[in-house]
Length: 313
Image (cartoon, rainbow, N blue to C red):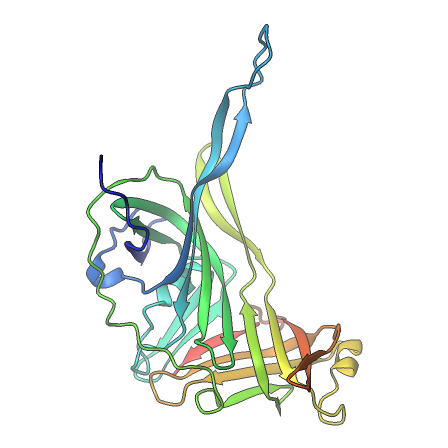
């Protein structure tokens, strides 16, 4: 009998493709991803019944179709440690429909794009079983909760390749920096409509609509649309300070800004300059304090592709 496969023995690599769905051969030395909470659906698809006539009752044979893989995981939210150097999770942002703009020694910015989107190849081992997702594209959600480790939850869909047995790569993960807990000290700025607020939780959903497009002559995974969303829970303030009801009723566009980190190389700013305040739907009582759950929709201006920016400095 073979030895059991140890569930915790996982390795994840990710590399940008230069040609769509052509495996660029990631390496452990250059393309390792420090991840947690990994989930994989190794053979997503449909089972089409053959619906054959038969002279007796019984199950019908099926044919698997529309095969793809779906891989989800978290990466901790931290910079590269050096201003103007892309973080190790940068390729994941590019595979989730963002452009990467680097200003040497100064900043790295990620903003949405609507055309010429990049794609990833992901290699994922569990035990010695290797899964390869080619042509992968995806979406993500940033979570910053008070007294928690900020992270991004990624979900990628890739073209299906049959898993196989292969020696695990040895990833080098030293490029990933230790994260900072979200706190008053480490997260110095949060504003809605330029009003500083006390923040319990923040979520930015990239909102990509990811669909496999499996046709005769072309098989791909596409980001066909997107609808970003920001959800926060904040301490309520007098309506003379900030009135979310009036803002929602008037469909007023407001800026939302969050800055996490205080030291160069590990400062991450989330800005969304034109957010529509959605209708407040209720109140929350936390520790005897009134809190507002607020939902906002980052909207593009007439220039487009500017609904939000993630900037590392």
